[in-house]
Amino acid sequence: MTVPAPILAATDFSALSRHAADRAARLAQETGAPLSLMHVTLDSALQELRQWLGAGHVMEQQLLAEAREQLARLADQLAARHGVGVRTVEAAGAVPEAIEDEVRRLGAGLLVLGARGAGFLRRLVLGTTSERLVRRSSCPVLVVRQTAHEPYRRVLVALDRSPWAAAMLQVVRGVAPHARPVLLAAYQVPFQEKLRFAGVNAATVEHYRQQARMRASQHVHALAARHRLAPGDYDAVIVEGEASQRIVEQEQEHDCDLVVLGKHSRSAAEDLLLGSVTQHVLAEGAADVLVATATATATATPTLAP
Image 1 (cartoon, rainbow, N blue to C red):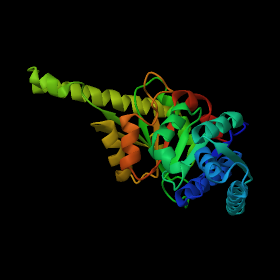
Image 2 (cartoon, rainbow, N blue to C red; image 1 turned 180 degrees about the vertical axis):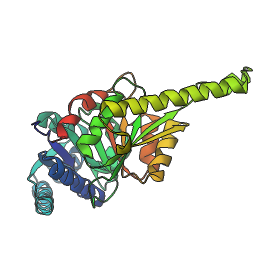
Image 3 (cartoon, rainbow, N blue to C red; image 1 turned 180 degrees about the horizontal axis):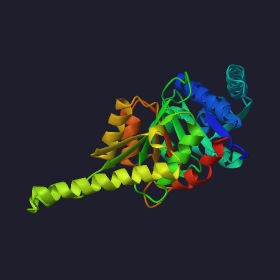
Image 4 (cartoon, one colour; image 1 turned 90 degrees about the vertical axis):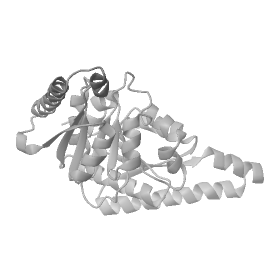
C-alpha cells in the first residue's frame, strides 16, 4: 500500500483560508494523508514593530503568542470536525520561502491555499509573492474558493497534447477520488484566419477543423482508456476555441467544483501562475483550481491516493 504524501495547508486565519484548511482536512480524511497546518508571521510586520518599539518588546512576543493560539484553535477544530490529526507549523519570515521550505521538508504531495486572504494569503494568490511561491513549488497547489461542504463531485480536467498530460488523471484520483471526471480538450486550427486571408478555400479549412477535432477526441479517449476509465465513467468534452475561455464556460456548464490545470510550457518550473490560461481561470472561474507542474504531477500527487 502506497504511503500517502503529506498535505500542507497555509492559513492567515481569514475566512477563505479557513475554507482552504477545511478542504485540506477533508482530503486528509478521504485519503489518509498526514495534515500540517501552517501560519507564517510576516517578517516585514515584525521588522516594522521592532523599528517602532525596539527588538524583544513584549508586543512582539504577544503577536507571536496570539498567532500560535489561533493556529492551535483552528487545528483543534479541524481535528474534531474531520477526525484527523493536525500538526501545526509556525514560522516567521518571507512567506514564499517559509512555505516552500516546509513543502520540501515534509515532502508534501499538496499545498492548499485560500483564493483570497486578509493577510499574507491575499498577496500569495494575487500578487508577485504568489507567483514566486507557486513558480518554485515542488508540489501541486490547490487554490480553494468554495466552502468545503462535501467531497469534490465533478472535476474538469483540462487536457492538452503535452507528453505528460496523461498524469493529470492521476491528479484526479489523488485529490478527488470520488468525483466524476469531465475531460476537456479545446482545439483550434492554427492560423485559421490567415489561411482564409491567404486564399485557402473554406472546404480545406473545414477539413483542417474536422481533423483537429478528431485528433483531440482520440487523444481524450485514449488517455481515458489508458487509465481504465470505461466510456460511462467520464464525460468527454471536445470544443473549438481558446482554452482559457472554454475551460471557464465548461466549468459552469457541467457544474464542476474543481478544475485541474497542468503546466505545459518548456520549463515546468517557469511562470506557473503567470500563464494566460491559468490566470484567466483563476480570475473568471468559480470552482477550486488545482495547478501542478509536470514534475509534481509525475511524482508527488499520485502518492495522495490511498
